[in-house]
Image 1 (cartoon, rainbow, N blue to C red):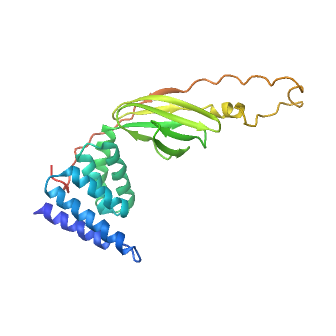
Image 2: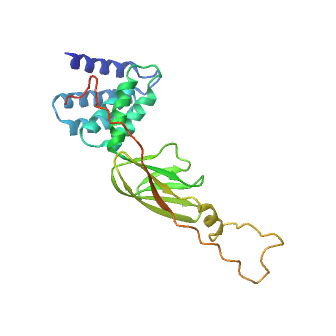
Image 3: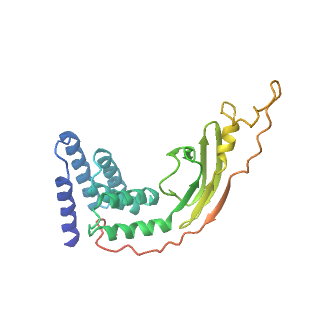
Amino acid sequence: MRRAVRWATLVAALAGAVPAGADDSAQRDAEARFEEGLARVRAHDLEAALQSFRQATALMRKPAIVWNLALTEEKTDHPVDALAHFKEYLRQLPAADPDRPRAQKHIDGLNAATGHIDVAAPNGAAITVDKTQSLGATPLADPIDVAPGHHDVEAKLGAVMKTVAIEALAGQTMQADFRGMEAAAAGAPGATAPQAEGGGATPGEPPPPVPEQPSAYVSPTTRLVTVIALGGAAVIAS
């Protein structure tokens, strides 16, 4: 009975969370995909429910939808995606919302099951993971959450590009160190190199070589993560 009440509460929360002036068609489509996802959960077809919740989230990023998407991703072994969406859900909640501790428990458990990469790089470096995931320019707000295993982190500053190979471990934060790229970028072709005192090199002479920069390295930084059993009233049945 408690689970049935919880489902009804979520459906009501979705219907009441639509802002005035929202596109009616997008709202109806989001609600339809959301309710379809709930029905698929009740039928124990979580993979199909995952697709429904993803479609609903693409149309409307409301807490009820994001919460159910995160739960379904967690249940279907997509821990990195689930972690991102539980964090999004937590950001959507008011500071005093009673659901915050429950969401934080999921985040703590998923933090312990995933790896994390802290990027140390000069400001303005474009960061890419595994050639496909573009994360924007440094400084990054948080470490990158990844699945345990091998990852290539790439930093591009001007014409200079470096790659650091990471072996991510569950529950630990590794560091991808790109410090020192500024000097290499200044000496790269097309970059403006600093002028030496006294007017620089004599005309006709090649400029002095740019000192070789130390290569990027990876140093592990263990993060202590407390594994907290997932508690509270779960929306999706075990």
